[in-house]
Image 1: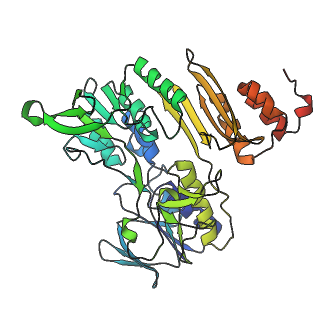
Image 2: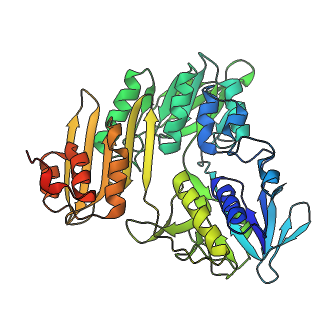
Image 3: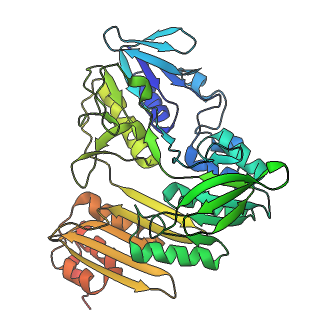
Length: 423
């Protein structure tokens, strides 16, 4: 069997390794467009704050890992897919045939329609090349403007702050990480960052970017509140979009991403999709959406590979989960963190200590949660949501005191509830 994977990110690499391990007789080819070894974009902030070298971003640490494991790696871009002949055409005009194909091409950063967004020294932080450019220009004491305080933006924020730059963050929503945290927790993250010396604007848009300074080497960032910021570097982190452009005319069905069934198969029998490019099943809602996080990519890669091998494996859906370190303040969100219609909820906040927890229930099942400064609950919250365990009387205990989440987990997953002391 001839297996081909387009995309050398976590989904593609894990799929290739699963194919090789499960069916050693098959051939496995990864096609990745970047001229680097396969790497993790989530490792780029660690590269920026000098915790790792470039090779530390690589998904596998030895240069010969792929050849040693019988995985061929081609560095080129796929220009077209012929779904009738099971044939790919690369940009160098060569052709590659396949029996089974996995599309794991990931996503790309979205550039907002702002005048000056294409000026030199305006960068995304999405590729190793971007990382090199930022590391060269974002020196200690330089002025850096970060556009976007979503999940990706806040990961980059910490790396930049550790570089000792004068950092200003501009976010158009009313709080930081608005797709992950509510007004209370997002507001606390903003306050924390400000106390750490980061200037943060929320409910603010960048209207334009202009050249400024001697010989036009600096930048002037104009905000919609009338303020103007000086910048040596502007970093755009305003969201991503699935890499589906090359599929135009292929007949593969696309919405926000590539549409798949619960086996991660597309509308073509021999073609699958995984990762950021895939509109896969959401565990909490049962609906299909793009979930651009690395745990989902890894989950997709493994399950898609098993189905490519004919080993029927159902994708139960990925739990929406984000864990973020903002300059030492850990925040996390899980599942339907914003709650459900008709559901119950509870929250507890200690603003002075930057502690916050919010639990969302549907009947007596925990369906979503947020936490700030409470790292011991990370695995427990995900576990309760993913198992959909009925909490029974423990729901009321948690409504009274949501910090008892560990007790509730143990009582309901290890059948020791009758021995638990109820305060």
